[in-house]
Length: 330
Image 1: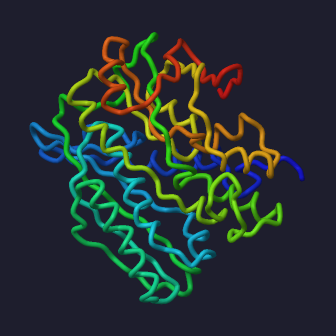
Image 2: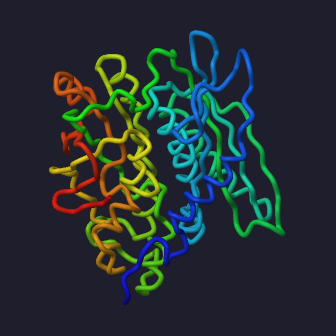
């Protein structure tokens, strides 16, 4: 098999970035007065001025993980993923999540699917301590094949506690929090690898007692411990490690990151890499590789942060570049 990449699988992140840039350059109007935006578009969450507080907003979806759910006829976890992708982005700027609305587009209504989706949404809300205050369901047979699930979450943070990465300094330490698995990113490449290698989603995944499909459907971890962390420690930066893997760290700072003791990737990542003949660099540019959230903080607060989060020190902030051991990512 030729080496698989995210771009060959159909997701070219470089083209995606250029497309987003062309879109956002047209978005110049900004509300004046109360409710004006506090930051430029491009961070994990949008921020709106509410006086002493900032209202934070995120929007995201489950992506092609829904195709694995369809193949397995198991839809009771994708609601957790939908909430997790939004809530974790709020946590990445230090905001406390409050409320959520979902958007479900379906080829045709199916009560058995919607009920299972509701089970996951309810579980995600409980974990995140948020209310689901509304949503929308659209039947779009001419547009949708199967279904698509997305949502929007709002949160709150005092303006003096917003964490953007502006305070990151060379020498800060990197504290990594483990992911629960593949989460909800890179599934287009993962599916292409599995299908091209002739595997079935129902096939056994030997490192676990699960099938391959069940392993891929493991819900995204929700990192609510971040709220305690930012109250008790000096935190200079936070990152939700999602699509594009470590490349998203470039949105935080002009400094670099040296991961000299990275977290050990889950067996699913080794499986995908071997079956797809994927390079180490491509893996770290596509998947979370075992680290779903990153905390950047001064050494003086590391002991307290470790106690709160149970994470691991994985490296430090350097002058430039992103390195994992001897591997240069950028």
